[in-house]
Length: 344
Image (cartoon, rainbow, N blue to C red; front, side, top):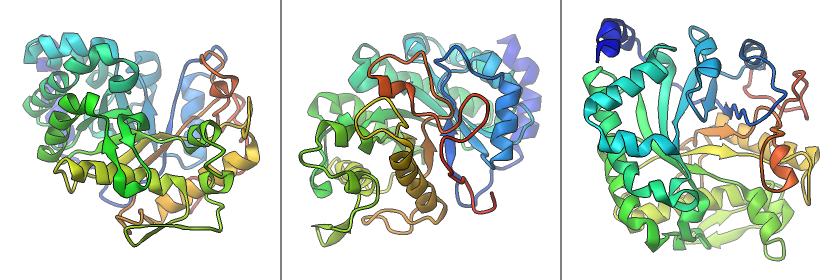
């Protein structure tokens, strides 16, 4: 308790500064499952030189987190799956101490835009599922005590596979096996004006279903369209986002925003992977985000996006392509010519 008491005055003063309310810039995921990454100070210079002002850190590793202090780069910080039981079963003081010692001692609260409590828990780590919403509620109460309940939003990121049906988008339906956890989460998101966080990968949908899905539809290059509920779809990204919107509406939740906390396309390592397809996909994601294009069901409502990944990660498991999502090489060179804002 003494840790957060010692810094509560600083947190209060800093929280008087508000986050920008303009159009959200494109963020990028800073994955660190690799043995050859440059030091965080070099990473920060790379981000700034490319106009990237928002990143996602999957874990609050002090070695990676602390160097961002005072840089002006906004942060989405992950709360690891394995800590959820401790936060869910502990008192509010447990959440206060965890927040202050792991995050707020290293960076100002005004830099932290989101806490991502658990990553793809419901489908990939279901043991932690029952702890998800209680941990989120305890962390939110801790933030309220610190006066940060309205400035740091809390949610949890989900794989698209929590949808049992996503085609056509209007048939979007959540997997009944996760509804007992997901519905209380959606209630929390509605009540706190937070966002549904989803990880969207048309690349995986394409390589697993290429007999039904065209590469052009997956990479924003399709000349054909599909009509659903009088709405026109020309790409899988829009269709997937709207499937989540329809699924939420089916459960009685109409206005919760959707943010894409991971999306990307690999430059190598397998079928359909390569710089040309990666540029086509990520380039269009960036342009649509910056222009607040939205989706057919929510036109003009910009979808906040975090591209995956900053660097290739040679320590990733799975298919070889899992190691090749990096937009930059470790020496700072771009894998392909992409821009992250209109000025850069």
